[in-house]
Length: 497
Image (cartoon, rainbow, N blue to C red; front, side):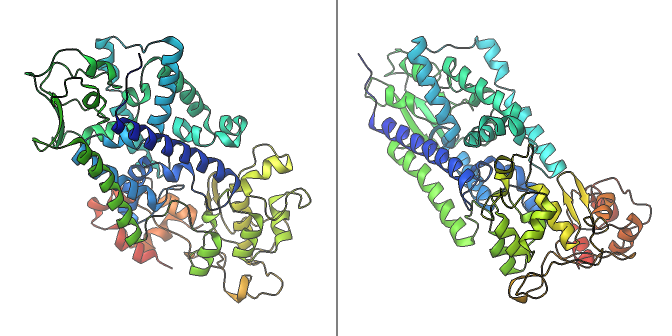
């Protein structure tokens, strides 16, 4: 006889299913349309990855958007108030594992459990994973975990297995392994590897939300233990204090005594389950409202046209979802010249083709959007610290003069639509230090990297910033501010164009 599922658990499954389906649809649309957020922008862990960079300079790691911080803010509040409620009610990747867990139970007629002693040690793995990800992301200023992230691999499946394997080979292997082991062991990734789960587990140490057990009415049926997806011992202690609890309330709704043997509490006081659930959703709604009020509730990058209108357009803003037409129009570049510099046939690649589809349309293996960024930087004669090195105005394309810094589009002046000067174009660097408008000084940069980005010397940079001549040129600037008594804000003012 099938066990009857409570209404609250039906609701939870509907929420998780909706989130999983919605996220999957968005990842598919992201491959087809402009302006659709990527999986990176929808992952709340991205807010934690970019937090240090945002605090230091107000900038986001590439592929991260302001919406990531809003999601993170909601998770932090939920984590403090309701433990790992996010994991049990809002996590789409957790929902995906649950689907495969259900499938595995249908196939194998049961779920398996890892031996308790081994399980106890394995659950600690996610904490060093969290620390390593944050450290290396902070150190490099990039999403170092991205190629290894099974969630990112899942979000790009609609691009085709070949494309996923090329960019997320390790992540794809981990995704397949995660889903396979989830068929045998419920939420395997959540238990052992999830860095966001580790972060939420740390927040859950604040003892506000707890599930309490009344020993006097407990009939020791162990049903609560059997339904717990995280394999927590619920039937013996007087309260569930494990950081592994994802607040799914499966144990509470499965208890057959109907005497509040298992009850939800806040700050030690019993609170109805419905109120707990409403509070969890309410926190996220408030976070969304705050994001709306501050203008940060945005999960996709501003279009090139919007950035051009605001006068803040940079070469690095070119995305894989940008089209050749939008790049040419926004930067004031002749479209035919752009095609020529990129090295693609306009007969095969239409102006409305997204850059990331160039390889597939034109039959070019390994084509990347950074190829277009490099081409635009060369046309405009501006330095661009690309994904594979630094391009300077001293390296113009063949047959191009170093002083040819802008491309004039027919019917426009100064190489931009409506006669507006290009925000990315600058006169090539003179022997003295020249700072282009699109240059952003970051604390993660060394003086050597600053000099390379500006096509200058470290001596010129040191003089511009007013730093001691004996300062190290190979250490990140933020690591030396206490030693030399400066702030990143002061340095940014000094080097501002």
